[in-house]
Length: 417
Image (tube, rainbow, N blue to C red; front, side, top):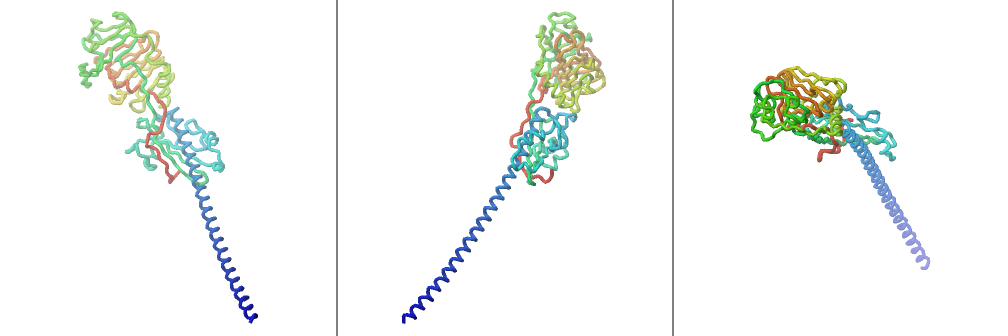
């Protein structure tokens, strides 16, 4: 009896041990499965974190290259074809118009950038049917300068870090501060109207009718006076048809004598306009400009130390709606033929005496003429030579800082370089 009871107990214990072993094996398998699943999750999260870090790295590099390019645009805005930027900037480019590769390497030097990352920056005009909308297909073929002269261009920057590529694009706008010239029909040391006719040759208001051999009839309230630095009503100061103090040749008559001797523009303002002309490719030193207008209407043309510059062709320079700026520095001007210049003529540092600007033939200036020092204006063709237009003075602008246009920036994954 006892033996049978012992055998039964032994068999029962062996069965319980078997079940315990099965349970142990099952628990061990479950724990291994959970460990493997946890390892997979951790590995997946690590890979995702690495991808996110690389995406952040290539984004930062692309953004840094764009910001670097924007600072270059502040220094040299490409306002003319002569200042066009390269087709693209890469780490292999060493150009003053491109981001400095060494500076970018120093700025982005974490472990992700140890694998020789690449970047590409492109400058394109927004001269498309939708100038405020960017697309690679619509913008890629546009000029590398501000062809439409609206002061806006696209900058597209791409960066690749460990085969991860990101691109950013932004519409960059340059500020165009107005350089404040006095709004006058004429400022000069003296005036000589060689025509003795009994008709107006200088209009101090913009006429209502600018067609043909117009007169000065105007409904405008804006008056641009004739201001002389000389101080006496004599022919050496104001050589116009009698009576000198109310001559019909200046209509409506508005003449002021004893204008201050100081230059109309400060040296800094003159240098800013010079820098704009240099950026636009419309600066000429020692030679006359081929035209009083730049490649397009409305540009600043700057001529320095060129002697006398004659323009006697039958030409229209700029337009009433897009006036330009023609600056003479230590240079004189002879404008003749049947030509019309729309804009402002400014003569800085003229000769100490003699004629600085001569308006001959059937020529007209619609805007204003400003001559520093004792420079003299000679006028007197068969019709009105000088017409005041206040609007033209708003276009005496230089280039300021370049900055991103609000809401015109985006990040994307490019389909090409």
